[in-house]
Each structure stands twice: as C-alpha cells, then as structure tokens.
Length: 114
Length: 114
Image 1: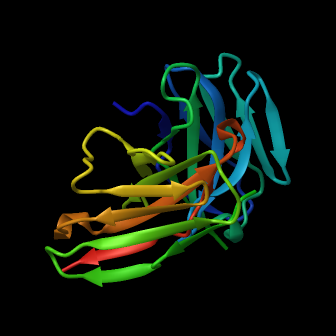
Image 2 (image 1 turned 30 degrees about the vertical axis):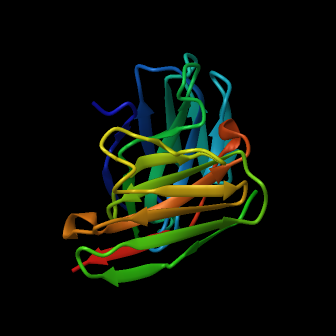
C-alpha cells in the first residue's frame, strides 16, 4: 500500500493548458514537499508546505496543503514546454519514529507539447 | 541549501562485483539518506546513513548487500555488493539539516550490471 497516493501518473497536455496534480494520504504529515526532476539529475525542491490550509505560489505554480495535513495539490497555470519533467510529492510523517524520512508519491510525468 | 557531489555519475559493472558510490555535502547536515530509483519512477528509500553508527535499513534492504558508511557530517558512501542485473538502477543520496524545510539530492549514479 502506497502511503502517499499521487495522481495522475502521466499527463500529456498542450502549451497554455492548466493542470493539477494531487497527492493524498490517510496519514498526517508535518510537511509536504514538491520536487521536480529532469533526466540525469536528482530531484530539486520546489516548495515545502507545513501549515494546514497553507497556499504557496511560485510564479505559475500554486501549491496547497490540506486543512488536515493529509493531502496536497500542485496547480500549474498556462503550462509551458519547460515545465516538462517528473513531479514528485513527498512528505515527512508527523510524530513517531519516522521523523526525517521522506515518503514519496508515485510521481507524475508531465509532458507539455508546444 | 546544501550542495551534494555524488560520484560516479554512471558505471557499467560485471555481475558479482561491488561498486562504492560516494556522496560529499558542502556543509554539515543532520541527516543523510540513500535511495534507489528506476528511470521515470519514484524513489525508494534504502537506508538512513547515521553518523558514527550503523545505518538504519528499510524493509527489503540489508547491510550485507548495501553497506553504508558515514564517518562524519558531510560524507557518506553506499556500496552495492555482489551485483546482479536486478541491481541496475539509479542510486541517489540526499541530505537535510531540517527535514520539514526540504532535502537536497545528489545528481544520482546510474548503475548498469551486465
């Protein structure tokens, strides 16, 4: 059973379209983080959300943390070919002995066609 | 944020041999981790590299197969021992000073076992 369910796993859209990627869990996280990875590179941190209900914006990207800190979403407005890549949500579980370990969702491969 | 140098970036190895991957961080960090990733897929945690003590392994990974060292707060190695073609994958190290504020990843080691 996947602790963090990320969807969709594949997304192929045209330049200028909007999209949303979801990350859901039945567990509570002290933070949820979004990374973007390009071929041959490691994941690069886009944003971290730590407060329930928090919304963060990074240019055309909007990130939201659910009120109960169990889910998050990434919304991209007017996608561009440069947004193409693997998007990963990841979380740090609240409490217990798992602190510090990052749990990843399945990832979303986004392709934006010109 | 910290910068991680990981090497080698890729290698092709004969089955039955071992490969040691090195990870150097440009500043002292609290936590270091090792992951495995198939191209285009998410990351699977292998172990937490503990400074000055034995690594903590996730289910399905054992010390004899993946010995890890972390002699100080900036350096760690992962050895893939007695390799088989099933070990072909991308191996990444990661580090963080404050988990809730994000992690830095190395650029990965693409291992092919023939």
